Image (cartoon, rainbow, N blue to C red; front, side, top):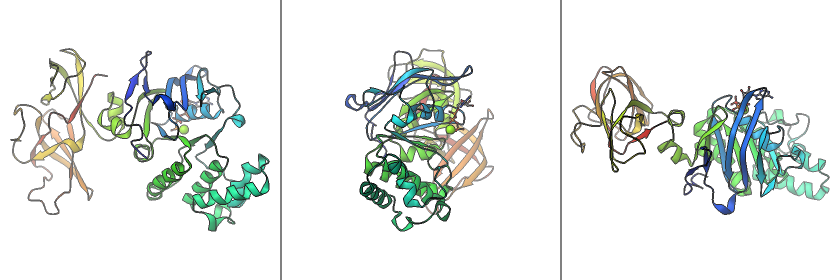
Length: 388
Ligand SMILES: Nc1ncnc2c1ncn2[C@@H]1O[C@H](COP(=O)(O)OP(=O)(O)OP(=O)(O)O)[C@@H](O)[C@H]1O
Ligand SMILES: [Mg+2]
């Protein structure tokens, strides 16, 4: 899991959309300018993606952004309004679902309640007319893979949510699809079980080597499970990248805000050099230690993650440019979460700055508390400048 394609940064396609730069030899699933309209509503808007063989790829976005519609077009349950889908070099857009070497696992799992676990897994193979001994061999192998051999004779209602999820997975994998589509695969599980199952699921998928496109609205799930993530909003793909890319170098305000927590300062570019830029915001002057593509005077946002901010009692003395990259604030809220503490600092402009402080020391000398007046500072490489 993770980092599979970290060496392949995003590229901007000629039409301005962000496409993933997958390695040339692994254009296993290629989606070209896919559009789906429902009575004038554009649910999927000109989506282009390249997905590598063996990759776990996540579509991440808020409710109604078009994730399921995109997945359903891949599965063949929905006809695209326009655009093309290639699987292993073959155009599959016109193929009916049952001919595609693709399996879609639905959120509800859709297990047959009257069949045992064994028969649920065998169902598709029987329907395909596979010889009995081959069915038995495959079902046993799949049940072993998802560690459900002792449960083979049970009915779905005699299983926990996580076990049902694994039966659904075994049933999907039994048919040896080339591509697995998972729509909110862990949606029905509670938080603890979800977290445990995420890595389990990745291990199973990777041991089979099947290519996977999954849909989720849970960013932690996408970051845990996927090698690359596409962030969707209103039918469009805003950015594609490895988890650390979308987190550390978001391409726009929406992505920065959607993935994790972020502080956004709104201001103007006042100095535009090749090795640095200066941005004035009502809160402070930001000195950024790298150039950006922009022009002086343009409106920009400065994004800083809460964990990149230091809180001190005294004005910061270690900054390379003492006049930049710090603000004064009052602690108006704090939440101790064990491994770290979240602080909300109210600045003179009224902006609330979020900062997280890791609990590195068990008994630190000083800990800010409610009402404290403190200094927040960050270094010149901590921020991302966003122009859109
Ligand atoms: N069959 C349909 N007819 C008309 N509109 C549809 C149809 N299916 C989906 N839509 C609309 O298309 C948009 C995208 O829906 P979709 O189900 O793809 O969203 P989603 O990203 O999967 O959301 P969620 O996270 O809530 O599942 C929504 O506005 C939805 O109302
Ligand atoms: Mg959906």
